[in-house]
Image 1 (tube, rainbow, N blue to C red):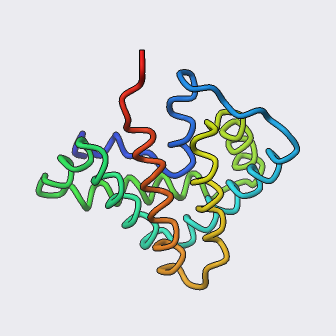
Image 2: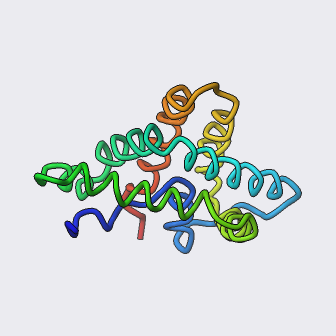
Length: 154
């Protein structure tokens, strides 16, 4: 496997990546809604893996040079798609308890600046069809990737 495929991170993991450097939002009663939305989004992204991973890779490549470089490799897109679809299956399939636990951990670390984008992605769950769902979350997902990709202040 191409080593460029390894940097691919999926959806809600983006908001937790730099949680140690940024203050988390307070965990409140709305956190249960965030957990439920995270679980539902992971399940829908898994069910719509082909469309979802296309959008995720395209948005990651726009903001992250490592992903853009991986796409330049002869089998880069195929490898990124394979890794991404595997991660979507791991995040959105299997026992519900595991998804809830992962989403509870993420919900505690969502930076305040990311919350509007996460909420916008959750709103996409109402879209009919996988293509519409994926296109709906393109902009907020891209905004999350951009947030995660910004240099951190010292």
